[in-house]
Length: 372
Ligand code: AN7
Image (tube, rainbow, N blue to C red; front, side, top):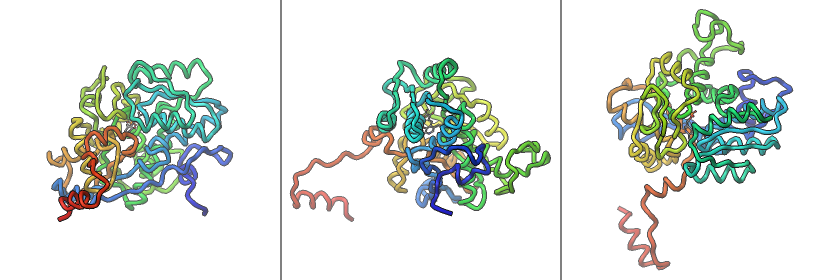
């Protein structure tokens, strides 16, 4: 076995590929599962919290898992171009994987509401960036219509190969823990990721029989189960963009967590199925709590995720206080994207640099205030 070559190579038996499929990969996946050492205690929790840091994927978010599959299948099918609507991370991943494949990419992004790092990525990888006067939901409508009329493959998560790639996160977590967690918490925007997590956990436990109730004997992957239990799935949304809490689409979603500024999620039914079958729940967090948690994680654990990603831990913290998690439980939180994606929001909420003379005395006097 040579070095790690990405999640399609790693999990090819559990993915819809053949030996002749031309794999388009940037060695995505295989991200670290990091145990939190300080926040569980600070939050009064006697269980374990581990974060799956998806910010360490090649373009800095979990979108690479889905994009390696979607672009691989698009190229296998002869596509010369791909298109997506995006709040930023999907566009960065689409641009990078299209570059890798040598095909054209088009990305529709909401005017002005995308984090700077993500825009830089799409531009740098040579994507044709279309900044529309509308939000993500408007863009999603448009790309579905455009992909019908033009020879471009749609690579949003309505493309089933996206969820196929993203389901591999569950396999990695089970392998790292030696079991499934008791709870899995994650942010929910367009709702593809929670659906993919549940698909992964379900396939990992599937007994390939009607009796197991998961695939009703229909599972295409005739493999030994990886584990025996599935986690309770908990999805957290930003309060200004929480259609799952309102029970209907939200017309003008607003949140500082621009990645999940989505009012009309495409995977509505799949996400509800994940939550209901696992006996989990949805809840919402304020922007203030999201930012405070992002900072706590960076400050006390050394892990820097983007605001949307911190929504998973902001929700967890809130629901621990409400006693919604069993004592002693093992909780995994997906940190969907890297903090460097959105430098503006990070700098805005942090202690500013000290403007100081290039002079030893002045600097040491300042330093003494910090050394106890
Ligand atoms: C960091 O890039 O929808 O519930 O267009 O970038 O699967 O949509 C991003 C979504 C969470 C929500 N965290 O996942 C896009 C886009 C981050 C994200 C989500 C996104 P889904």
